[in-house]
Length: 349
Ligand code: NAD
Ligand code: IPM
Ligand code: MN
Image: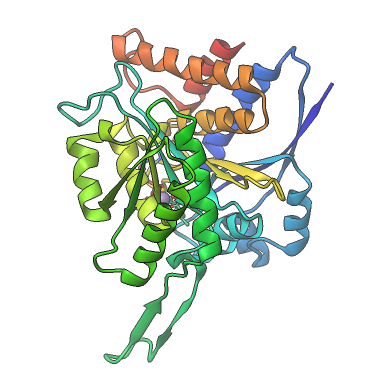
C-alpha cells in the first residue's frame, strides 16, 4: 500500500483550528483504503518566532521538501510585525518550492447564500501567478520616517515566469467545458508588465485555438465579479491582482470560510502546498468559530493533485451535502469548528 508523506504547517490563529479538522477529514476519507498517510507536523509561525527568532530555517525547508505535499493552515499574528511571517514563512515556501500556479477555484454551491442578487452559475478558477510580481521583495525605502520618505515595491515579471503560468492556465481552460480564458491586468497603465502579459497570452493562445480569449482590466473585473460572475471560466492574472480578486471571489460564493487553494508546482520538482485562501483571523481565533470548510476543500485539492480522484470527489461531495443541509435549514445556527469537521468526517466515511 502507498503511504502519502504529508507535511503539516498549522501556523497561527484559526490556522491551527481548521487544520485539525482538515486532518480529521483526511483521516476519515483514507480510512480503510489502500493509501495511508504519514504526517509530519511543523511548529512554524508566531510561537516559533517568539521562541527562537526563526521563521523557516533552511534545515526545516529541506525536510519539508522530502514530502509528497504540504497542508498549511494560515500564518500571521498581531504580536509579530506584519510581513515577518507572511514573507519569511508563507511566501518563502511558495518561492523556494517553485509553486508558480496558485490555483483558486470559485464555485457557488446550490443553495449557498451569496450577497449577489442574480449570481447565475458561478464556476470559475483563478490561476494566480505565485512566484513573481510585486511579491518578490524588489524595492526599498529611503529616508524612512521623514517627510521625504520614498518607498518602492517593484513588480517583477519575467517572460519565463509569465509564459509558464499562462500556458498552465490555457491547459486548464482547454480541459474545461467552456474553454474560456480571461486575462486580468491593467495594461492601460502598467504598460511594461501589462503588455508582456498581453503578448504572452496572444502567443500561447495561438497554440490553443479551441480556447476563447478575453481580457479585462482589473478594476473592471471587480465590477463583473459582482454583476456578471458567470462570464468567467479561467482567469489568469498576476500575483497581487490574483490575491485581491480571490477574496472578492470568495465573498460572492458563500464567504471566505469556503475558499480553498493550491500552490501548485506543476513540474513536480518540489511538493505543492494546499491551504485555505483565508488568513489567521485574529478576530475569531481560539473561539472555535472558524469555518473549516475551506481547509477541508483544500485537502480535496491535495488529494486530486496526488491522483486520488475518488477520495477527492468524496470530500467535495461531503462539503456539497453539508452546504445543502445548511441551506435547507436542516443544520441551523452557527456550529463550532470541530462540529463542522465531525460532520464532514462522518460524510466522507
Ligand atoms: P483573514 O482572512 O484572516 O480574515 C478576514 C476576515 O474573514 C475576518 O473577519 C475573519 O474573521 C474572517 N474569516 C477568515 N477565515 C474565516 C473562516 N474560516 N471562517 C469564518 N470567518 C473567517 O484576513 P486578515 O484579517 O486580513 O489577516 C489576518 C492575518 O492573516 C494577517 O496576519 C495576514 O497577513 C494573515 N493572512 C494569512 C494568509 C495565509 O496564511 N494564507 C492569508 C491571508 C491573510
Ligand atoms: C493569501 C494571503 C497571502 C498572499 C499573504 C499572507 C502573503 O493574503 O494567501 O491570499 O498575499 O498571497
Ligand atoms: Mn490573500
